Length: 214
Image 1: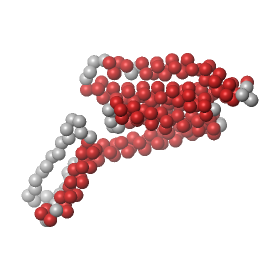
Image 2: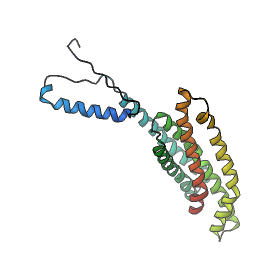
Image 3: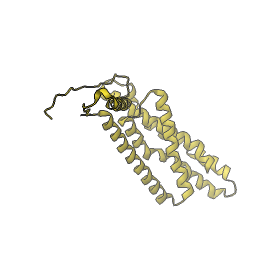
Image 4: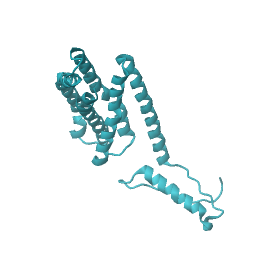
């Protein structure tokens, strides 16, 4: 605005987290504004990439929540049975928690690419659970007085098909992990790992937790 000023650019190191850096810098600015030596000097943040990333992640999270709600509505529309719908829907947060745990230990950060992978996996996560629930309830009609047997037999009838289908989905992403390394493949590797781990978690939930709940 036509007044003398000093511009300061703050860059993060390669291993640093952009959002954490943004918060730390803003906290330091807050302390500087309270310093008596800075009286009469205004501090203005011209551009903050950390806030842009946070806004993008929040938008993705909101889209994911809407997608999850719509998935539950669609499931109930087809299953017409609240216990079955709740069992299948329960697979989604459990698989997310398992995937986020793997990402933490594998050193994969929660960024726009990895969150996109989680959102893409939402629709596929319920597939395995739906197949198992349908198979179990078909067996329940044959053995109405023996729910344990119905759960075991129903799951066994589709276990091989579920395993083959899940592994086929995961194999599709292998070229991104072991192919030629470039900027695009490095980014897409996070997408591949996120989706693959989510699908493997959904398979594990479908053949263990879903039969037990049924």
